[in-house]
Image 1 (cartoon, rainbow, N blue to C red):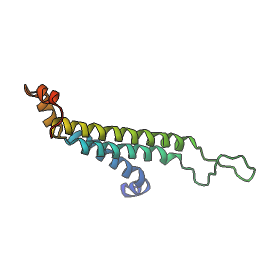
Image 2: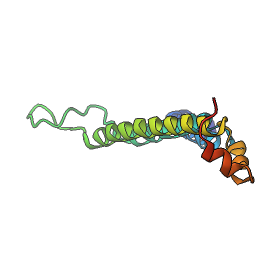
Image 3: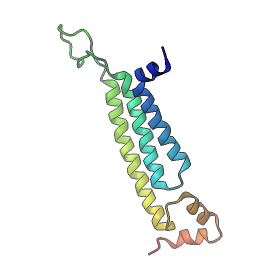
Image 4: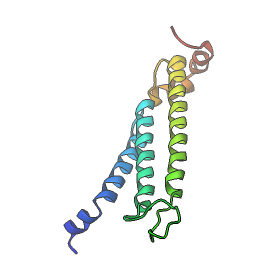
Length: 133
């Protein structure tokens, strides 16, 4: 099997892994907190797809016992991913709320600037002073 034929047969997995790596790169390489949250969301979405991919059974039907059907699909992967999506939405909402509070407290959402303000001698005073307005 040639490399092109292998990539064509595994195109879905390859694309999902590419999106996963892109999301991980964004989380690691970017200093902006919103961009980090977008990268985390991309990474989570690719994990959902990667988990659901083998769960699809072609020709499978809902797991309702019927003599007309021989192949049944397992609903457990779909239920687990639905739960993971809800948790991911909650995590994203919490991250956005924290980014807003950090913006109010430090005046920026750039990670290196927040750390510099927090570590500097005036950092503790700026944090105690509260939001800038």
